Image (cartoon, rainbow, N blue to C red):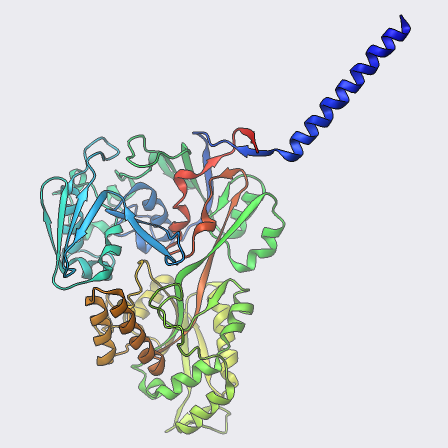
Length: 565
């Protein structure tokens, strides 16, 4: 009896051991796989610029980064941007959205868009060509106070409705970049037509700008705007891929430091943007993924060529470029969160001139250029010519990055006896006023390309050199041949022809060097490992910060796990 009992105990122990070994093997060898499930809330910490009011309106949202974030989730365009997926698609590509197809005439002037028939606004009203026509009529109005470059393009386009689901756009000349402008979000005509004027769109007090009716994957929640955040809920009538997340809460914080503290305390699932100087802080936070991608933002030291006594000679401009250590700016001032720039056209573009002069630091060249141009060192140790000392004011905004970069530039220029006096604008409004009136000697400024096209027209064509709201040629560079090349590149239909024209333009630009290219920014953001479906690693370039949310319909909160091989 005792022997039988011992045998039973032995068999039981061996059995339990076998089960334990099998379970351990299963856990080690078989990979746990998250199972996406509808539901949950994604909370993202954002730092709000209080000086720029919230306007949830696709025609005016670009003036505010957070407005652009929200607008990208509430509105849709005829087309949308998507990450490039092949080697010959280095940045982003344009894919159908509200339009399911389009055709273009052989001469590149006539475009016909065929709209989807299955789309309704969040209030249930069908989407039609009337919405498209209304949106563009507002943009083309002389009273429109939004982005001038966007309006300038559409004012040259004849817009026609060919029934409820077809639009025709007739251009006065070929414009290959036109498709990039069709990503613009569309407004609901039934909510706005005959009720507001184009000038009202920029008014932050306009009811629609804080209580919009959209057509995207999300909509504003009832009472969704509060002092501490903004809440979106899934749009049940959305025509595209249904999002997993029921709700998105953008939670406001006064600083990146506060947002990261919330991330560390598991109060948020992500932070919209982190800077290079926060790398040490991030390393102390567990269970997060930091995602970085090149940004289509190019920072220049814009030299105001109206200050001809200072910058009228291209030899002076070239000397300044050779004196600046751009690699040190990237490695030290920006802690590696950028890439050295050599051209107004992004290196990810098919139009980039690969053999362009990079103006790598060479103090010997810089000094010789100044000597040969007649700039001698006076008894104060400063370069001077015709009683004009080579001293200039460098206008910057108050951000930490710009202060660090400006200090590095000023230090570099001391080595060739040039003085750059750093002048910080008191506020974004003051900076904007100075830029519009050309009230600066030089300015350290970042310009952004939001298009999937290399066209640099807006910052370098002479038509944008006049003071005022359309002043975006911040160097005030006016060269007839440069204008001609940009104009021809806008009119050419074949990519090979455009590439040659842009190469010729870059060669001329690099020789004249109206400004000094410094660096392309890198955009970084963090998301908790609690969140699945994040595809930011597939982004080869971000045109705007809201591109980080391109994958929003794929994101989900880990709620269940299944095991798979």
